[in-house]
Length: 524
Image 1: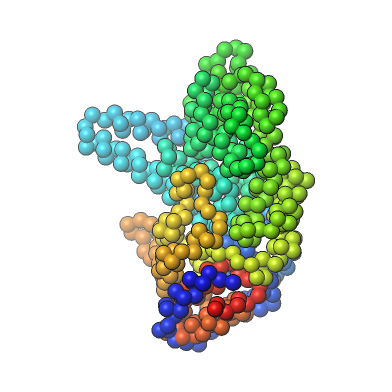
Image 2: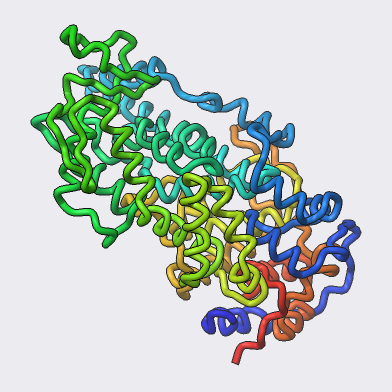
C-alpha cells in the first residue's frame, strides 16, 4: 500500500533512464536474512544497511533484538565519531558556571557604548549560541547514523520530540545539547517516571515552558498544563482546570539558579532547598498551601509535593494509554489497533513505566508482526534522510553534518526547530504532500550523485575527501531488491549511470516507506 501521489511523481522522473548492470563488490550476509528480519532491522533502527545486516546475521535476530532493547549503559561509538564529538566544547555537558559566564558576556555586550562595537559584540554572542546548537545537532546526527544501539537512538529522537523544546527561545541554544544528552538519551529506554523527572529538572524545559518564573503570587500555568496535556495523560483524560492550577502551585519555586552560592533563606526554609547543577527548588518562592490534585490532598511540604504529584501522574492509567499509543504510532501505524495499545499499556503498568518492557510488548505482538509484513509506515524527513545516508555510506563516517542539518530544515523537521511544545507530527499524512516529495527527490539526487559535502570538514583550509555512495550493493541484490514492485525495478533497470540509479532508488516509493517483509502491491 502506497500513497498514490508518490508513484505518479516517481514515474515522471524515471521515464528517461536506462539499465545499469555492474554488480557491487561489497559483501553482505543479507542473503541469509529473511525479508521479515530485514524489515525488523529497518523498523527498529534508523535504516537497514549492510553492516547492521551482517551483525544480525552473525549474532542472530534474537540476540540483536535483546541488545537493542537492553543496551549497555555506555555503548562504544566508532573512533572517528568519538573524535568528532570529543572536539565539541559541550560534548561532556554544560555547567552552571559556563552558562553564567556566557550570560555575563551578553550583558557586557549590551553595555558597550559604541553602537557598531555593541552590534558586533551581540552578533558574536548570537553566533556563539548558534554554533553550540549546531554542534548539539551534529552529535545527535552522528549518534543516529553510527551508534550500535539504534533503538535507543530512535527513542532518543522520539522523547526529544515528545518533550519538545525550541532552540530559539531565550538561551536554549546553549542548553538543547545537554538536554538531549543527559535528560533524554540517558533515560530513553528506562523508566518513564525517571525520564519525566529528568526533563522537569533540566533548565531547557524550565526555561522553554516558563516555569523558571513560576512563583507564589506570580502563578504561571504553562508547564503544568503541558505536563498533563502533552507529556503524560493527554487531552480528555479526566484532569480539570482545577488540577492544572493545583499542579502549577505545586511547581512554584521549581526553577533555575546558576550562581554558586545558595539563595538567602529564613532558617526554617533552608532544609527545604534543593539544588542540582542549574536546577533549583527555592522554598521561598513556593506556595506552601494545601492542594487537591487528581482527587488527592497534597499538604504543603516543599519539593516533596512535586514528587507526589509526578507519582500520581505517572501511575494514572491515562498515562499508560497515552504513552503507549504514541509509541505505537511512531513504530507501527497512524492508527494502531486498540488491542496493541492495551497490550503495551498493560506492560507499562505492570513494570512501573519501563520503556523497554513496553517496546518488548509491542515487538512481540501479532499486530507489530502484521505491520512488518504489509502495514504502511511512511518515513518522516528525519527518518528519510538518516536511512538514505546509512544505506549510501554504511559505516563510512561522514566528516560534516551541515548538509544533513540543512536538508532537515528544508524538509520542515529541523532538529530543535519545532516552535510549539507538541513536537513534530508522527503521522504519515503530515509528510507525504507533493511539495515534500519534490524536495526529497532533490535531496535524493544530492545524496545519490556524490558526497554532497558530507566528507568535507568545516574550516577555511578543509579539503573534501571524495566518497561515492554505494546503494546498489550486495544487500540490495540479496534482500532489498525483492521488496520492490515490478514498476520500480523496471525504472531502475533504465538508469544511465550509477548516480542516476542511486537517485532513482532513493526516490522510489518503496524507499519512502519503512521496509516491508512482503513485496508491495502494484499501484492502480
